[in-house]
Image (cartoon, rainbow, N blue to C red; front, side, top):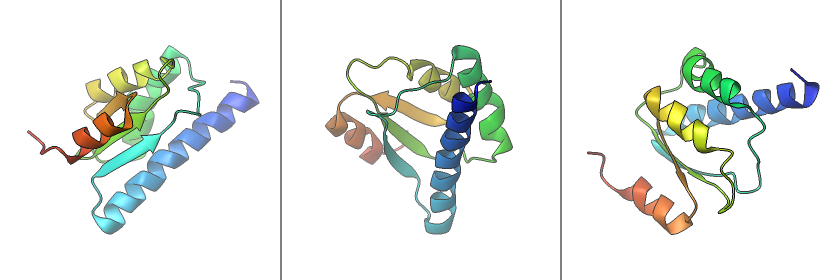
Length: 109
C-alpha cells in the first residue's frame, strides 16, 4: 500500500476511534461527520475490509447513528455506506445537511 494511502487509513481509523471514545465517555450515539472536502482514497476491497474487519477490531459500537455528509458530486464514499450497513453499523450518506440532521434526530425504529 502506498505511503499516502497507509496514512489515510490510519487517519480514517483514528476518526472512528475518536468518535467511539466520545460516545463511550459522554453517551453520545449520533454523529454528523462532514467529509465534503475529504475524498475517499480507499479502493472497494479496502473499504470492505475496513467495514468488516477494521471496525470490528477497533471494537466500535453498532448502536450508534453516523450521518456522513458528502459533496453532491462525490460517490467515492458510496461503498463505505453499503459495507458498513451490511456489517451492522448505522452509517448513512447524505448530500444535504438538513436531511442528515433530520435522520439523526428521528427516533430509532
